[in-house]
Length: 95
Image (cartoon, helix red, strand yellow):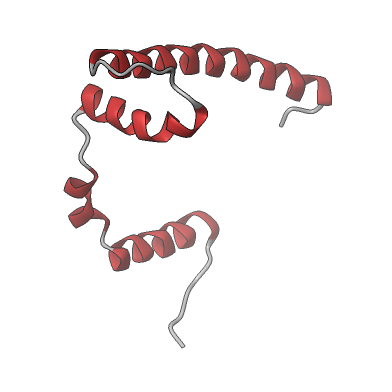
């Protein structure tokens, strides 16, 4: 699709700029959570996922447990098989 390595590089640089901007904003928001709790440390790489989850909960009130009933393993597997069949014509047969 990109046709040349230069197009790929340009595209990746474009994505990189947006990703860096978003990551810096998220880092500031996570540091805000730390500061608000009265903690006296700077966000470290090892803290990222813990505080990213706290930020996600704060911003979106996201609770993973509320999704569980909709993502039951057998339903998800059947959905993937159906999707593969519709998109690629691949059929699956239980042996």
